[in-house]
Image (cartoon, rainbow, N blue to C red; front, side):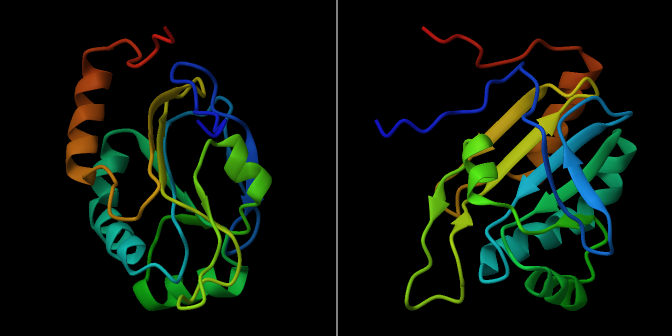
Length: 175
């Protein structure tokens, strides 16, 4: 094993802050009024990320009706993140400048850019977190590849069921 630390379901989401496109700061972790869907995406260089976030944009009203605030972030620069917003017209909050230290804190896999790619610096592989209003992690889906992410409709359905039935945290056994 490599010592990668996983997020602990049922525990508070680690507090991180990144700059937000349009100004201000995107804060993750801590108590909020709503549930939070927080997605870390690989960055502008990733076509699969764009498809995934386009699907999220189409479903954003459904997530919001279910009581979620939708936030996404990457290690991209402001310019690269803004180029995606300009191209795809995403309306969710988009954070940028995720540091390697923050990636480690979130338990994300980290990749070096390759010579044949468009990435310009180390970047995080996908991470999807559903966080309750108390700031606790309810779902953590960490992937080492862009093709392995939860289906957003299935995730929303599962979260609606979890909330409606006040289900306990899953995956808490550490034996």
